[in-house]
Image 1: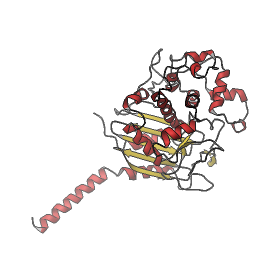
Image 2 (image 1 turned 60 degrees about the horizontal axis):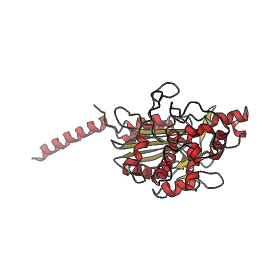
Image 3 (image 1 turned 45 degrees about the horizontal axis):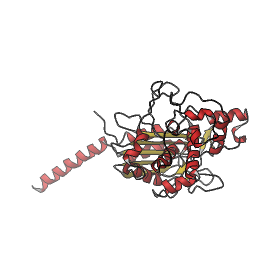
Image 4 (image 1 turned 180 degrees about the vertical axis):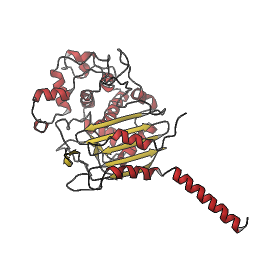
Length: 373
């Protein structure tokens, strides 16, 4: 091949690669553009993780952890997970089943002999898959304190939720007949872990999950007992200005939403899920099996069908198998979208209440998922 022909071929190849590059923009640049376009450098923000084929390929933070220090959010920043915590609570219960110390069909009254008679028909499985019918502890708390502002109501803990429900005499529906998302159930699961293991819920998570998976900065936060390193604080936009809204009367419960962690540690968690580090594929199967209430398909309160296992929603997305969850609490929005067959995981953690974390995570996932026929 002569030099002229070589130059012509090289020019043609470069032109072709440029066309391909322009037709298929770099996903990382697109993610940056989306988040930089939404989050200013000096406002509360978000952290984004993409794991593809078992390898983290994108870990980046946007905005600041709080408006006092204005520390930058990065992959080591620890966020309150809110309801993403439920997958850890469910895993703790499954580990106790693995140990032979607990059965899914055990009732509340078997675990807590002083629990009211209505607990005889509520099993551990009902708590895990939101078919317990337990009353909403937040509504019970609001009823107890009437019109008192939230910042005047003492923080309730998991043991307090148990006490509230022990004073109740009824449920929303008979156990197993319907599906209704229940923070009350997951607070009780934390108490089940304590009762059965003889350890505090936070200690059990630390010893059996976090330490084993090298999640060195992950913890169930208890004010006055431990500290969150590199902590993000929650915020709400009010009247065009940010206000720190990090804690509420329900922020001290652990089983339904009290874990703090970072992108760095969540890489280890995602790896453990993929490799069945803590539980075998057979043992994890109940968590990935959708509940079927006896009265008909599981539905949200607005009538939409829902598919739920133990700590995971299970609805497919655009033909892709999916296990996912969201978290929402004062000042925080979080989401984990996991596509085990692809394999792909996208996590978005926000320390501000105005962002749609699940929607953002799916928008990122769309950059990596191949269309299904």
